[in-house]
Length: 222
Ligand code: FPP
Image 1 (cartoon, rainbow, N blue to C red):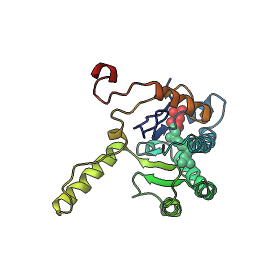
Image 2 (image 1 turned 45 degrees about the horizontal axis):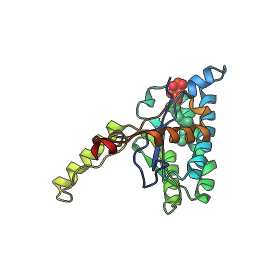
Image 3 (image 1 turned 90 degrees about the vertical axis):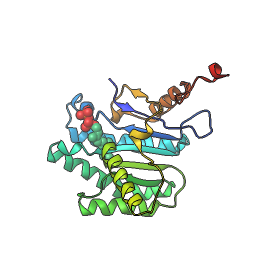
Image 4 (image 1 turned 135 degrees about the vertical axis):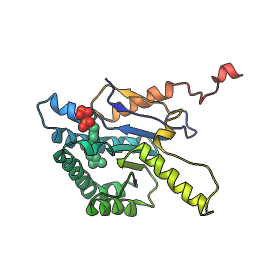
């Protein structure tokens, strides 16, 4: 039943909303099947939902919006669907980058770049370079991303740095790691239907949660 998950990682001093919202844009295929459409059409509608939600996140004062757009497991899908998803990413960057930049959005891309087609890497670099000094919303695009892969890479890199004497600190990590003590909101909706109202109601649900971070509730502790 749950299709979009919104882990909100930490507060930023405001009582009313999260600093970071991360979304699994799930359900494009089921949304399309329910309407007799192709999966590609579902993904295209997913991009429209993404545009809406980026705007909404900006309006709602969210600082970081992370979207899961292609996972390291998605390579097991048919080549035609992979081609569609890569095509959508290309079009999204070509068509929307100027607007994102104008709106002060900083784009960052996480995930494995090695093995991606050179033109995709160039577009990802262009998006990051153009927007690197922007300060409104941080849009983090997880592309060819997997948490395990990321943790393994980070551990390898750190091991090298420690071995070379360049670092003696502990690990810092990303989503799976950050998901510890995050609030997860499961939205009974396919991603292409997701909109500002859905984002707001997820934030309302988040704000009602009692966050204990492994400790005791405030009233119990005092
Ligand atoms: C999951 O739905 C969604 C994906 C694997 C891709 C999400 C991608 C987009 C919304 C568009 C491309 C992204 C960018 C940044 C332009 P699913 O296919 O697993 O749906 P299902 O579970 O109903 O089959």
